[in-house]
Length: 147
Length: 147
DNA sequence: GCCAAGTGGTTTCATTTCTTACTAAATTCG
DNA sequence: CGAATTTAGTAAGAAATGAAACCACTTGGC
Image 1 (cartoon, rainbow over the protein chains, first blue to last red):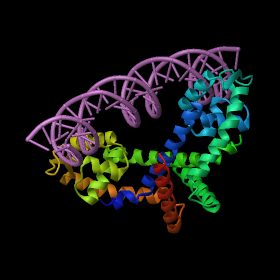
Image 2 (tube, rainbow over the protein chains, first blue to last red):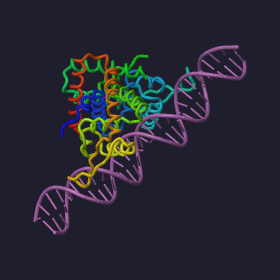
Image 3 (cartoon, each protein chain N blue to C red):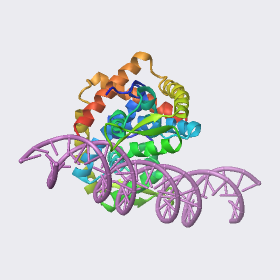
Image 4 (spheres, chains in turn purple, orange, cyan, red):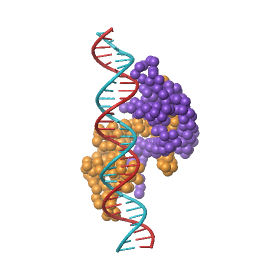
């Protein structure tokens, strides 16, 4: 059975298939090792290397919508990986920060993430990876701006 | 506010963000113009250029799971875009085929799809697009095989 | 031929995700 | 200042997605 050329050569389709396959592999791994979803991991990755943020800031930094960020934060808070301190500058929001346990988990997660990145993209050399990042940033910026 | 380097340089994250942005733009367009979802469009794209198929075959050709294919087919059938004929070779399945109306819509959809592809990826020249397709196929094949 | 195992397709149910609405605090502007 | 508007966060209902069970038919072995 031949693949349909119309579909199989359609770039958005290829992009979606590749992205889903990669995300699925990563999600499985985070789930089994740390009981974390991808959204939760993203929040931890940001808080882990740039300190305290409000949910509002996290929506910008992770490009997820505010409901997804809120759910991820609630879950991380239940798991004692982050804590919320009142925000002196704005009474509506809180500043979210990793707890010591959260920090510890963060330190374990990042190497796993980088290892998976290496494994999943090992068909590409360093130059190709850099090019791919560049291309994906351009495409995303363009597609998002034309909303 | 600086983006978090850990997250913002993570290839799977960039891939996911780009893919979602592109898919969202396309989904909006198909929805408003043809009242079709992406899954439905994929099925039509395959039936449109490679004739009759069973749902089983469509799951392979579109890389969607059988429930998604079944739902897409049911919806397309309700919209009179495809019809199901009994499959002489296997009494459990049917052969799905575009109706004349389905064919007509298909002829309108494909130019729109190609136009959107051009627009969304116009930051890339032809060589870059070919490379990107190649890379995405490799990544997807690798990630899917390690399931 | 007949039984066991497997497969295509469908349904059902639980889970996830998105949309919309709402609350409370902050900002704008007369 | 004070009313009107905007914004951060949350909650609740609706819709989409996924997993498991199920039915009907086919296939493979005896």
